[in-house]
Amino acid sequence: MTVHKGSPAWSKAALVAVVIAAVPAACTTTTDQEDPVVARAFDQVLRWSDLRQMVPLGLSPEDSAVMAESHINNWIRKQVVLHKAEENLSPADKDFEAQLRDYRNSLVLFAYEQALVDQKLDTTFTEEEVQAYYEANQANFELRDHAVKLRWFRLTVPDRKVVKRVEDLFKSPKEEKQHELEIWLASNGVNIIDRSAAWTYWSDLDAEFPVDLPEPHGPERVVLNSDSTAWFLEILELRPRKSAMPLELVRRDIRSILLNQRKLQLIERMREDLYREALQNKDVEVH
Image 1 (cartoon, rainbow, N blue to C red):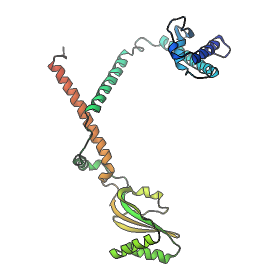
Image 2 (cartoon, helix red, strand yellow):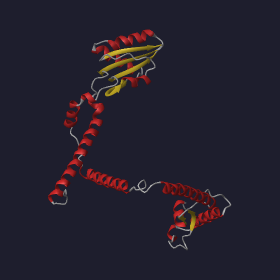
Image 3 (cartoon, one colour):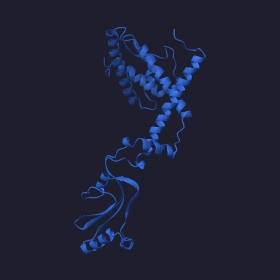
Image 4 (cartoon, rainbow, N blue to C red):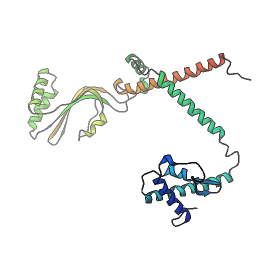
């Protein structure tokens, strides 16, 4: 059933495509004389007005002809399969009225409920509501990885004595030693990477440290060495794997959960109110 170049059908496709490219949309008419048939498949016809909608204006005559031929061929092939399906399916197999009705009803209900949600749903939550849900559902927020708050810096110096001096200052519990370390780092242009304000998953640090990271054990200071480079990690807080996630990591998820619960409750109240109103007005009854 394919239409080939050089056949009468191709000539008509090319002619129609050229006319389509030249005639503005406002000139389309609906009479048989001015809306000719450009293809037929069994008892179905494809008219000029149908084809014109498929071929964009502004194309060259050659491009319009190619696109017109493609649409005509696709339309014919589709009609052939549809015709065969109509012949072979029983009336019961072709009865889609119930499915179409149910589908339409579902779309109408969804559109109405979405409009109701957009209009009436309160999307604000207090910190107390978020905290209460978090505390009641901590079992659902289990960490699959260690979460830490930390700071670190890196030294690349060939002199191991310098590294050892910095390590002694770094691991000292005395405040004056820590202050001395900060002055030394600032004087030597060493940047401190500070992740103390947010939680970081331990495995995410692999990309930043080209050495094997040990298992964290809590607030601690760790020094990792590799050739002439040393990394100094200060773990400020630790939430170990399989413990409850910090609230900061799940606050957005909790707000989404609470919002969905509120949405479902709003829809359920709407349905119940409408049902009771219909009963009261005797708009529904069971026979």
